[in-house]
Image (tube, rainbow, N blue to C red; front, side, top):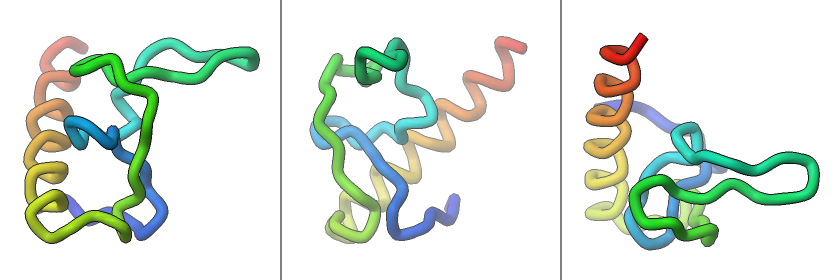
Length: 69
């Protein structure tokens, strides 16, 4: 399972890591590509089951990202 620091951010709805978020610039914020949410939750504030799901999604999206390069 992937290790995260306490202050890493994830989507509050679907738990996707913010490294995969899209959009945003100096005037706007990023949004989750899975559900479109802009709300976040920190790793340290997640329950154990949320952390397991978030790590699973991170690994899936990381593999997907590597295949597209």
